[in-house]
Length: 274
Image 1: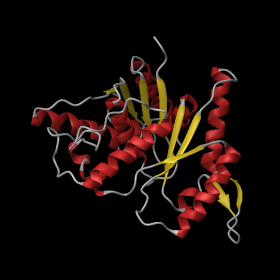
Image 2: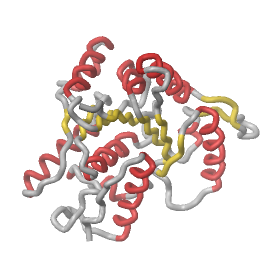
Image 3: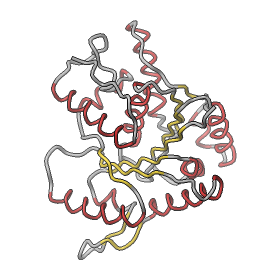
């Protein structure tokens, strides 16, 4: 059996939209026909886990079938968050072992530096880092000169990914690589001068530390209003329609399609909804 593809959604800054991205990437893989396992390492919030619990409840109540991922039981997240790093790592390793029959293991990480997050990054085949179009978010990737805004040096999260790449190379061989994709998430619809400045620094940093820049998800109401049902725009169809479908939903499906294509995912069917 081939080893599963391990994808980590990571960014040490909270509020960048990691869980929103994880939810959509997971459902995108499910709709491409992959067997997906999820591991939610954000032990206190557990947004990814709650989303799929909502999905199971909504589909059961409405008599419809939608693809579901496998999720290993790690027990009480609140209790595990208070446990020692050794206990947390053991729970993560057990979840990984239980997920090995999947084709894709998707791991959502917390907004901070934890032993489990570091371990997940070192196992990744692909890291996806969402960030808002803000120099506040960029500060975890790269430092800029406060006077000229020239790029000065990689920052703490970029250095963490560098360490993860070194650890993976040591464990899996020098040819092992981690594909790092940084996506601008929660973009406002209007173009802004600040974004143009930010994009220029991102391109400079991408060449320096080795990541790709991809399309993220704009700040749309549809991404939030479907969460309580455990649904995404990938799920909407004539049978699955808890909210009215509009042209904005068509644009949102295209955003998800663009994101999955940037990740290298093919076979994604998002044309069910009218």
